[in-house]
Amino acid sequence: MMTTINNGRQAGKSKRSGELLAQKLRAEGISTPQVLKAIANSPRHIFIPEILAHKAYDNTALPIGQGQTISQPYIVAKMSELLIANGRPNSILEIGTGSGYQTSILAQLTDKVFSVERIKSLQFQAKRCLRAMELHNVSMKHGDGWQGWASKAPFDAIIVTAAAASVPQALLNQLNDGGRLVIPVGEHTQILKVMTREGEYFSEQQVEAVRFVPLVPGELL
Ligand code: SAH
Image 1: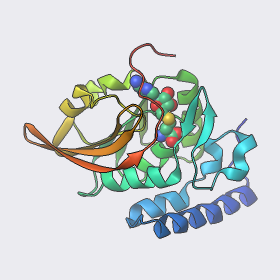
Image 2: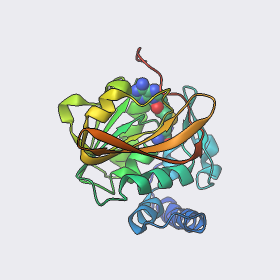
Image 3: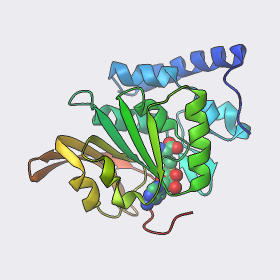
């Protein structure tokens, strides 16, 4: 069951909560105005199970079913900031739609978002939430994120919201020149990396230690 956001009181409450969350993230070092604005505008409570709604604006990851989690707001904001650090991308590829919360932030930072998820039921819920927010610039695909989305490539920016054992070659191939891939890499210990395409070369920046669910290869659910 999803909470409606068409109810005036509910929407007003979430707006205030979103603004408070954005203020918290600013205090933690998030400084890109477009990202803070998107966080302030997004009703995170609609993306999580109703029973956890009272925790929706806490700066924590939460379970969303199917053994998956909605990422911590700080990390959503940090990854978004890294993605747009070189300017506004024309399009963004996201791997791991999950709840769709990160997707909703990305949709406010670019013209077009392409998002791939391997668990059909999560994708279905995420679609409903984005529709409720009236974000119509997102295309979704049920598929294996290791393969990216070749028919829509190249992308100015790619974000992976699950931890990959290694950087998927297909994603590097689908980056525009100058484009950036933001991805957590590793199994037990994970590090958030930014890979930037410079012609046929890729530069690598290591940002900080993170904890994500794994980017699962193969078989779809
Ligand atoms: N950004 C999401 C994070 C969800 S957790 C949010 O904040 O809600 C990571 C998601 O990646 C899960 O939904 C999981 O099903 C998905 N995932 C894992 N491996 C995948 C793969 N190979 N291809 C596509 N999606 C994958």
